[in-house]
Image (cartoon, rainbow, N blue to C red):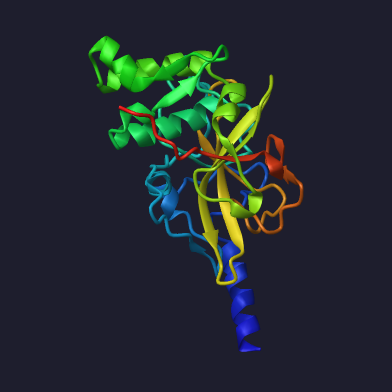
Length: 265
């Protein structure tokens, strides 16, 4: 009996922390968390160790804005402000380029750039042309931040959900890990990044999802519209064939992982 009472109190505390939804019509509270890895897990869950996957550790260290408002590339607030839990502190530029697949590609590219792994920063255009940053930097004699941002602008302009999906590897939803991608190719398609994963002692997994969208807007971690008491976390074990997110519906067989093969220098 004490154990049941203790779990009940813990769940009540979880529901009433800032991780839940604000009441409709009330101002959105400021985000109290500095990094993705600071977002608390529900009672009984702990973050899955990153192990040798440095991308997972990189994503957990991404900074979050205090302001939970999602802004568009032109500085205006997005019309729908009910989807996000927190906003990543990453520039989206001033053009309508960094949309859904672009946000995923940016986070992957930022990770590789931070690790000085320039040869693996590679994406493909709709016509199959390879856009590799190491080759780009050699042509422009510049590996600096300005050159990298210019390169990403070209990637965003010429790559898409179709090209990104082709570059990724199909993955079972039961093997979901941080850094995986939910993606549906098309016009419009959509892509979202699994930005963190936690589990309990029985191996039941939960995860956080981040997205960009159209028009280009701040990358943000979304709420879970199906389980508000678990939000912003999603349950991997409770997922059926259909996965509902605030602004898009995926199938769980649309999960993809990054290939492990590295390019030669």
